[in-house]
Image 1 (cartoon, rainbow, N blue to C red):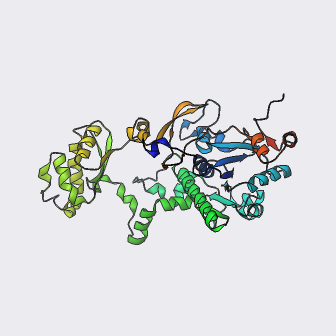
Image 2 (image 1 turned 180 degrees about the horizontal axis):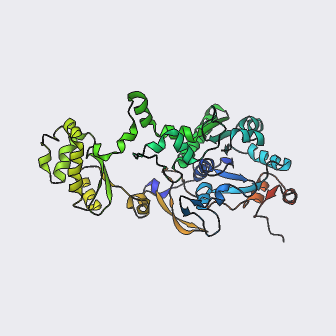
Image 3 (image 1 turned 60 degrees about the vertical axis):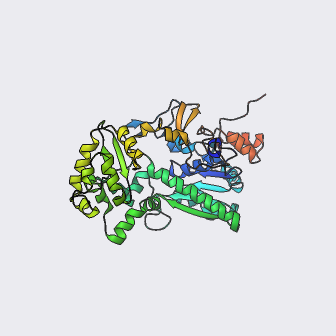
Length: 417
């Protein structure tokens, strides 16, 4: 058994405290990742809580769970503790600032103007905690004419050109929350990097991540093709202009597989022999890379016919045995039974109090001497209010007073004797 399989040790961020005042996924998702890594994440919620708790309908399907909340809440807020706290009230702000003083990281994705209005901008909070790392997530970046506009995953995909990279004539949205999750990953990376800078240089600072900037970074190669060579990457969607050595094919059972083999001249004869068409190797139409490119639609049609004669799994097994890189194009429904995903913990079982025994995405970074995973389900609104305030130094009488004044909400009130 390897160190990766044992997952020994605490989380790499064990001992770090994160305070979050954020909504939906891009910001909360970043804090959830820090929680997966072992940080203690305190989610501050006001009123009815993060709207993601109640966002149940999208794209024609219902994401409601048996407890009445949305599945998205579980994805965005796993591994956290929740405090119900009205930070607009003086006593609530005092409690909030006490949490911030004890925090290593503060995460928010509210608009710049709203942050200033609430006093949760970096200029305000750094006066309370100069060592604080503040992760600010926005739609379009901290500068420019769109800096104070709200945004969602789909809008970030739209302005960045991402929706025109699917190869479709009509712009296509990549569902669901793919850009939001990418922003969450980038923001967590920014937080850890800033923490490292703090450890080495003894500085706190704000780091800013946006949907727009992350989407542009994701499409790095495509953008450079456009900017340097004036090539529109969207034209790559037509598979009849791709070599069979880097293409997708429908097999005899209706399922698809993907090939990517470089350098092409090395693998061209291997592919021809593997599919029983050695005659194609020296065919003048296909013998050279240049001639294959000129006759690509005809060549792809030949291989379409070849691959229709066996199932996807038959072909991928046969071609991989010849040293060729062909893999199945899977649907997400297939991942839960994929032995490779299961062996590496990319899909893991989790006994959830609401959903029951389910399969979760596992943490993709495998540490040899640390553990990173989902440590607890997403909290109920205010589930840990008393616990968090007591840790912050409040007495039971002080917490009772805050509860009476409706500054806080909480479900973990200690039972009376």
